[in-house]
Length: 120
Image 1 (cartoon, rainbow, N blue to C red):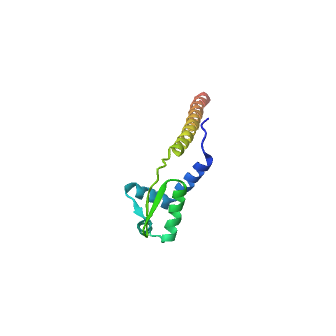
Image 2 (cartoon, helix red, strand yellow):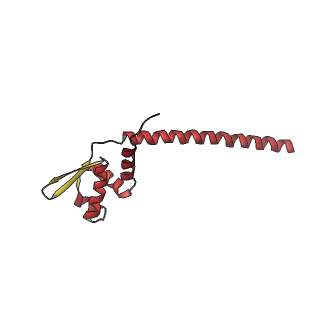
Image 3 (cartoon, rainbow, N blue to C red):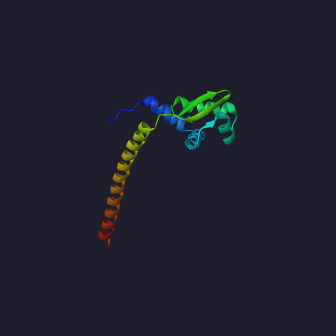
């Protein structure tokens, strides 16, 4: 069984659970941006955006650098390989369960047809 760092997964998924933070990651995937620029783009206060960026920083998904009075954000060095592997593992489990359910449904349909013919 694959071992996952539970705290790391929790931190990553908590960071990704918010639409604004996902939007920030998408934006930073296109270009680095200041916290002020991000706040304006997402129609938020600076304080609100700083909190979102802080959550992303804690997860290692964003890094910030302060030059003078401007704090610039860019994508962090951490990739989401472990998180993607966790999702893929659970997708495979659900696929297997749904495949088994499909077999049961098909068997019930087959029996229903056979029973219907026998009653005639």
